[in-house]
Image (cartoon, rainbow, N blue to C red; front, side, top):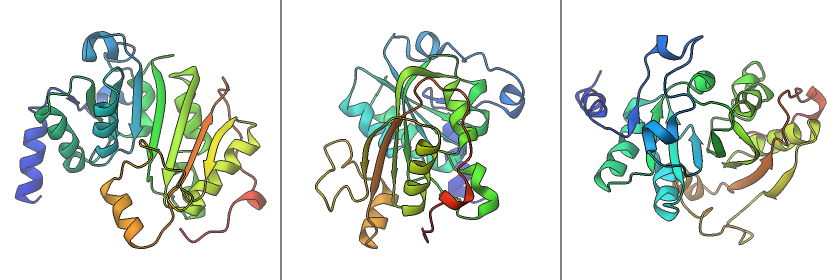
Length: 240
């Protein structure tokens, strides 16, 4: 392990806004924070918004700055990346921003029923290989995880440079009769991007420089808890 990465891992241990559960605390068990984020972590009753696969936490920090009346939690497994968001939020003394280092597959161990009001998924790995379809963060298996802790009226935002991920998620919504509230295949080219959607992550800036359109989808689970797979004939045929 490089010295810089080791330094970040050590500094992560000092951040009060970063929770890093051990494997045995989230695998086939429930962490004490489950159902208690407002009371024990944020110490307020404000809505909770997650950014899943948050990377450096740029969206988490930006949204937390714009909406101090909400609590934001960035979730990622990469400690060296999440360090950046936790450090920035610490330096800015942002009491409404926190970070959780864990695998999203274990997310039901740390969030309880009706605990989360909203989800952002920003530039996730589209997992283009067919055998990795269940690894996509909008795959039916992950939607079933989210359904366990989302409030009935919660929305899920997907922002991605991948046409495949965008079209795949639209197909998931269609197959499961989910409400799609907003859909745009090029938020900057069409002028659709508002103040929130114009927040740019490091990856997004790179993708834009490479000429990739940025897409956006906002949908609801409509109280459903089980979701069907997209038939193979409905899968999009895209390179990214």
